Length: 404
Image 1 (cartoon, rainbow, N blue to C red):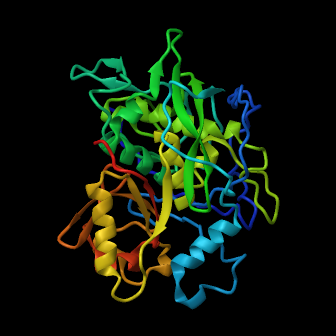
Image 2 (image 1 turned 30 degrees about the vertical axis):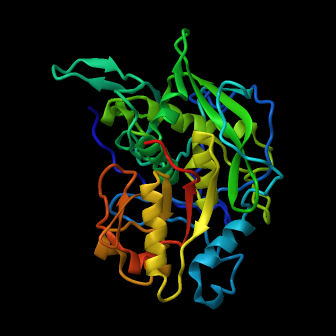
């Protein structure tokens, strides 16, 4: 298998200042990047901007969901999580739309077709990245094409690579770990050698709840995904070759391509009007809790919601009950650490990465057990009594009991 490459540090400076020279996305019209994304999409959705999110192994990632330049007054009543949530809404959280949301199935919905070839990706990687087809390696050193699945999908299949999309990978792993059939049913190989990934179109029923619209977005794609030029057998982003399956790379690619069904204004900065990045370049900017809820709905066809833990003294028993119920009910839940400047205690005690998204996988002895989407560097269990010292009190979770 390919060498494991350390994910880069993802920094979102686009909200208030121009991107640094040389850190532009690949030019879709350049000779070495001829095809951006060809779309047959027939749907458009309301505007949303992405908030920065990601983390490098052993370093600090820069999730800038709190925009200091626009909220210079600071945190109100010292409630950092509320300040972050207010900033995220100011920067373009999806507007609610009137909707009735129930679980969806692939059998009855209208289809929205998207054709994805080579999506834009950021150009600020230390190693050169190009498009290719990752392969597995046999014991004798021969190579083979990765299968879509090896048995049922599992959370361990989802491993973050060099892209700053920890929220995307954490959501993929959380769904695979709790309702794996949703993943297995969504990815199909076609007779012409392409792959189709089916995602559920979503909308906001209210400010905090995402629901399926009743339509399915079918993303038909080539098997080309970003790989390292000096190690073309390993995917640069979702690390499929490391785990021996291909589905994570295709689902990640589909989640990058779904923006072709959005309004051109979605993702545009509401103050400075900067044009939104698309494809992998968008995913690299990270996610906030509301976008994570949207991804959970896109992957499952079930409603998801952003809820909030208590931040007052004495909230630990109620918070523990909430988190334990999520785990026991099989509801995928994603939690995000605060920026370093907003940590209320030393996060290194629990080996927590800053501004990073984790999957909640257990509550044991009054402590939260978390999975790092890197597939390693998992933190120590965090006492619920100290949880909001390190984590944003707002979290995203799928609604309804899981099946796995």
